[in-house]
Image 1 (tube, rainbow, N blue to C red):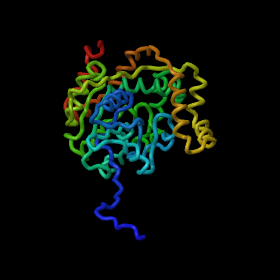
Image 2 (cartoon, rainbow, N blue to C red):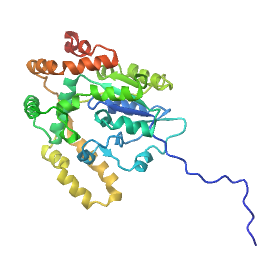
Image 3 (cartoon, rainbow, N blue to C red):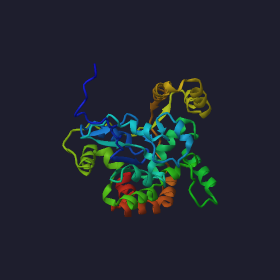
Image 4 (cartoon, rainbow, N blue to C red):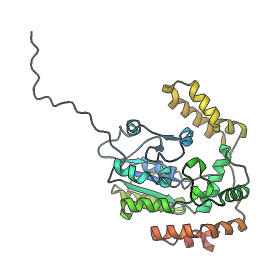
Length: 325
């Protein structure tokens, strides 16, 4: 018997995968993870469980792709698959903070989504450096003496006119210098598409900052979103374990011994162990002499940021009242 002819059945068309609508591009150590997670609790926002999912900044150091909490994608389909569960009525938010450093990122993001919008949370570069140094100590990349490391890195820069190409060569100053990166996005996408907030405001008034972000995104700003602020200083419980887990040699060997299908599970387990091996600690204050020296060095950077966002960041970050607070 001949099968009945099928009629009125639409052709099967693969649904195109959506690219992110909003990119939280920076900056590291400015409570961007807290902001990202808070936004992900909004019913009109879809945020991948992997915040540092990086695809549009391939010009940063390839060694970074081995970090436990960051994953660099070279395959566009794998990257877009992270957002496949987003509903049509949700904005997709992506949180790779390496984009702020990448000259390639604005053009690659435009190719993905020409209507993209951007979130940037800035922090006093001196405090950003100090906080970033704490992470580097835990990772085993730097020693425990911030002033000594800052001076050593300054000596290594002598005679160097250009910033390094690869993220692996970035020092503490490079990671704290973001004005030219912010300017690239403003030039490529227009100032009205870039919403800038300050860590210092977020740390004291997270609800107000989040409402401002939601208004910028054009979604319900009255949703009460829990914000687990901050960027605590941490030290290793067992330093030797941390250094071993952060070793590129150890990570590479573990990847070779683990089937590729189990890599996501292995990363999750390793990340949990790494986080468990850290404890909060009180960070000693930066010496006044070093703070004054670094302020003089970073004044042009802060003045440039002030011009870009239309706020006097020199006064906000470095006034006597701000220092006392």
